[in-house]
Image (cartoon, rainbow, N blue to C red; front, side, top):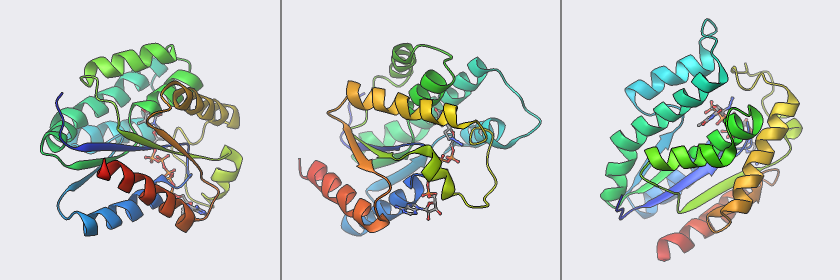
Length: 210
Ligand code: Z5A
């Protein structure tokens, strides 16, 4: 896929601050470059994707095997790519994604062990025309500390997995950060919201200037 735009993804475990930082970045970029920024989230972002999100994360009556889970996360992503991301990048927009294929490598590969991590990467690249993010902001902190931020909020089906699962998710992200260091920008997510925002803005401005 020939793209004119910039593709930025946010990754990390639960409650590391992705939603918070994306909202701040979106606000900053919309002022700087009006009508140029498109925000997407996974799973979801399309009519089909939102239905898949409900099946995967919320609907208590739906139990599924790990292979079906992996394929549904991918189906949601492919639909989002075909219907939203591809068009926006061709039009020269900046696409900011709350999760992309590194999540599948970390959750379904490293934690669930459904498939080898490299194989998950390869099938994702196949179905997504090889679209790799220009920048991946990886917010990293121990799962035990991050979960404290959830307070009394209700947990979805994946959040309810035990700590071993969430540690394996972190290892999956570390694997990707080591494998593709040129696009990974790893940030200590236990820093203050403002410090993290400033680091992200500096990095994104650098990328836009290029
Ligand atoms: N999943 C998967 O298994 N495979 C896949 O391929 C994909 C996803 C794509 C999607 O959940 C789930 O799907 C996810 C992975 C799995 N696992 N689960 N569950 P989601 O989209 O509903 O949620 P999430 O992506 O896991 O994000 P989150 O839990 O909503 O957290 P967050 O967006 O990273 O954090 P936040 O909402 O910005 O912050 C959490 C709280 O911390 C909040 O009260 C903030 O005010 C506070 N906060 C944020 N930053 C700070 C700092 N720096 N200091 C102190 N407090 C802070």
